[in-house]
Image (cartoon, rainbow, N blue to C red; front, side):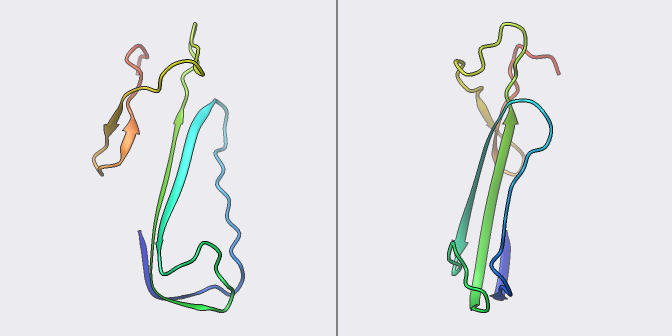
Length: 94
């Protein structure tokens, strides 16, 4: 989470999320903003700003006989920060 008493952008921000490497994956991202619009105006002052950003990705196992697109997603379990992450498949060795 990011907090700021005052925030100003000199230029319109450009953002991108990339996942380098191989393998199929399922990814999602989401941000919750307080006092900050989705599209900011360069030079405008934003007061008492909070941004919480969540990003999650998981590799899809494609072992022998796997039908990844037709299988239900694996069960999810909370990690130590309280974020829900996919549990590893039971039939896959670690």
